[in-house]
Image (tube, rainbow, N blue to C red; front, side, top):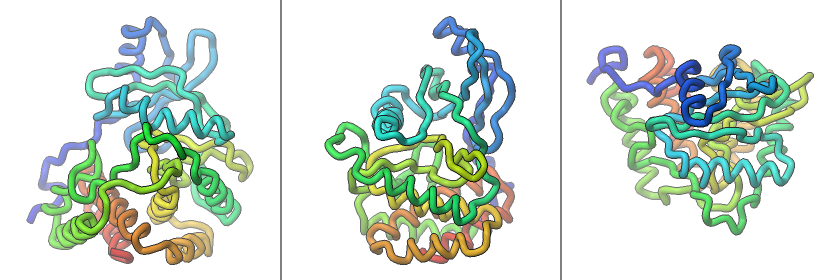
Length: 292
């Protein structure tokens, strides 16, 4: 078997802010001025200024059709904003080649470097507020787990099969879970799909916004708690925070926790193989194997 540095894995296309603002100008006539990159993120985002002077966030969603984005994630955000959830409005959306350029509202605050107990309390409250918000909205697609097939640029199975015996064994367990569970999440909750503290904005410890809803859909909000647990694994957190969240996950029904954990295990291990160093792959395998 090969290791990730020896295989030319395709990487996610990162935001080229200059090229995308040129595309926005060509497609809409609006000239946005790039002010600089936003911190964090795997694909990238940039601060931009409109001709009237107000500032926004420029984002890039590769491997996406605008119609699908409007029917799914953007519709979820509209429903959330109607209920008072602090998620950004979308000010402009444009198809550029195989991806979508988004210009979204700039919310106050910055992502916390780690999550303390007060931050976890707020994250859990936000998650609870997503319950049942999409009841009657069967038009919004449910979240696909990709346990048996590849996702659109993420959750790819082949990198795990070829990287190492350890990752290949994990991929087999992921497929085994997929064979015993539905391919999509059940439920009518709003699901963020990338809910971790890096996508929370806060001012003086108070959460002021939740960003990066580009993969949002309908399903079971408890999926986001599993995502949050994987997010906490990225770096050291305040004492006791991870244990509290683990206790919450321990209480979830197996038919909820297991497929969600399998999805995140596949997603993070695949991403690490294609984008990070081999040591990072082992880091995510360590977490994946705790419950799978």
